[in-house]
Length: 313
Image 1 (tube, rainbow, N blue to C red):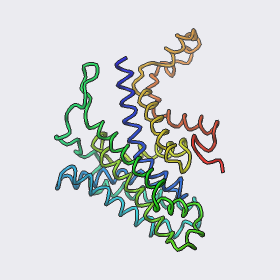
Image 2: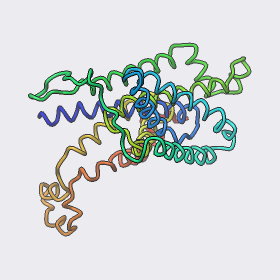
Image 3: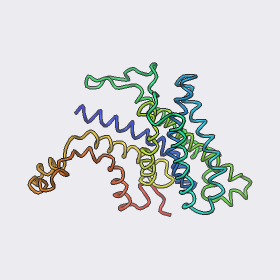
Image 4: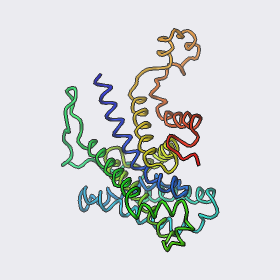
């Protein structure tokens, strides 16, 4: 029972961290239609900038300034790289952002090295949030969840209930009409792209201290963010939120389950059949945990091609 509850809490926290990264991609890819393969690199840059700034002004300064630097880079990328090629379609955007992701990765290796940096939870936040089954649960994990929920609430409220949100949604769906009404559509897209990069930067600033800050963190997160956006449905912020929780929970449980395919086969009375598969059937299912998100995406696309909350039109 204690394993189930603790895995459930860890899965929710990991899912909320995924949402912080995926929410920005939902804005950029799902709503604006810009295929940004380098989005996870903004997550990595957020972690490294926060680490660099925190060595000078402390953790909170890094958490504030790091994502802002990422947002500025995002604005520059949209203005000078993506806007000129947007009319040529997704293939051009994919090639440019794919190359940009490599550039960011190499720059990080040049300035910070090949290995992880010492970016960790600040001493002021290393205490227990509560005690569960005799074990202390770290407060910082709760802090990550609070930041994610706060970002979701703020972003949802802005898009749904403010004039700025109405203009953004109108610019995405009817750019020519919005431009005719006197709104600067290019500026709206640039600001929206910057907000998406900022959210990825915030995720990197808090997630880098929780997990690890290394040059491989963008690659590890890139596939997951696209899976979340596709499973949730393009352009659906609520769908991305629920898909993040789903992927986070399933991945966490898959990692923590120490059982093999042969064990399941024996429980079902198919032990002799699976024994014939040799070592493949004896490998723990946790080894295949990284494949769980892709498997979920395939199942969802087979049942609902537009994702869980995607618009059929």
